[in-house]
Image (cartoon, rainbow, N blue to C red; front, side):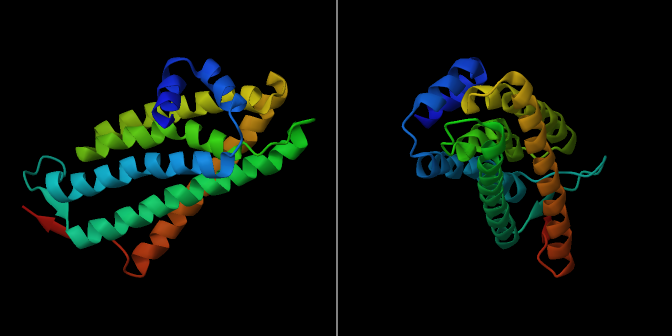
Length: 202
């Protein structure tokens, strides 16, 4: 079912949001399991890319890699951060729905958070080949599509007018940006206390 939803989100998002809305609402467990699977894509690919493939800097021929221990620790932390991010975003969506929905306050925040971030998770496949400019270009495209899915999906999944849905989605985007800045701050602190990458060259 998860692959069907992911495929539908890319090929016919409006119909897929309606399908997700109509499903039995064991949302907390059902869609959280989906998030666990999707978030593993960038984490696993980053581990392989940084330990087996490596990258170069500028015109240098030196290939940089991470040690297996360092990459494993960082990828596990990254995976945990993504899962926590989906949970926080989903709970915030459910909290806001009390304001924007007039009825049917079924918790659908985890579902919305999972499938709007699906393009970001799937584009994590590019981490298998860690080239900065390519990763940034594909990452920006994935972010743009995720934002589109959010603005398109909120009115359908939450069954509210498009005008309210636009404001609702904008509030979610704001929270997402705050979370991203917070993650960057935590990363800087972690590196400062020694929880950072350990490089090897080849």
